[in-house]
Length: 447
Image 1: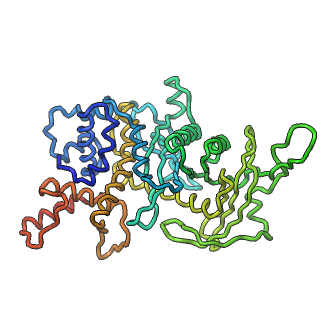
Image 2: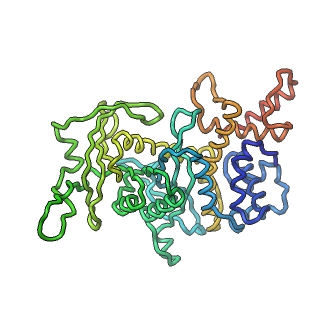
Image 3: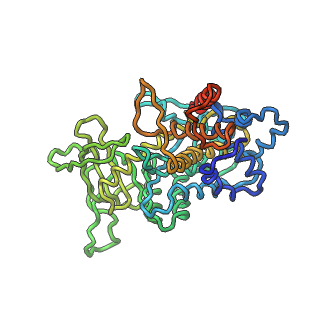
């Protein structure tokens, strides 16, 4: 195994405390290095092979890191969250969403049949067998990128209803998991302002009331046919106090009203740019059968150019401005980019573990590796600016995740052949050395 540079060790060292035994930590460190360097399937054998350990006779001890050895992934998630947030006291934007990992096999117990949101469209639904994960990410922007990145710190396996029924467990829906995750994040960040942003699938009164209870600002998309009410009249009256006032128009009807004054404002938009949008905002009550009406700030958003679909957004924090709500919801789009890049660059959906414990550990580790690579790249950027991969037919201005991963790989491969991984090519190098550096650059390619 190559000696790891200081900026990589400084990122990984805090996680040594989650392992019960030192030898387990050493094996995990070796496997993590192999996963960073290998390309294609992220299996234990591939990680060992890329490190030159194909002759290892006791290779089974490395499989035990995932399926048997004792270590605490939840504590690792807390450490990673603290590292991502740093010492800043600014409000933190956290995005939560579902991710379907396509897996098949009789030994995979937690799998189910789900709608594949990536391959489905409005008129065509694709269903697949696989595992459903609830991914939670911090939306953060660094100085060397042009947009905020969604950095995973917690990934939870949501077993299918059929699997829980067979095993005799109480089934938890996506909303149940979201409620438990929201309470866990509040325990980890007791004094931090939290904006929890999610898609319309998380627009549930149960989750909204939990966020109100724990002082978490839930920002999500609302159905256009939602039942909205005015606040009740607090004057004296006989009987029980009213919980809601007069019925208001649904968001769909509000969009159709002609004499509403729309506000125009430039906001941070998808892809790191800005866009002129139109919006109106009001406070009201959102009522769902079975729950008390939820006080919300409603924001109706539309595109003056008509390129984007008009949406209704809500926040359980009525004190938030419309601009903050819009930009918080738009920022969750970065989570979709992360889902694509962990599949493309870090091999999610290529692992082959069948053990229940190994399955529950492997995918969260690969998601967390995305954040670790970003932290390593940020530490390296403080020492030396990151390079952008360019060709004559493809020009780009800002660093992407593939650039960050390639630079980390390049330093690791150079550590195998040179005294220092930070050593730069000598201008007077021999043709053999030039060829070696060129070979290292090819090995470091992200794909």
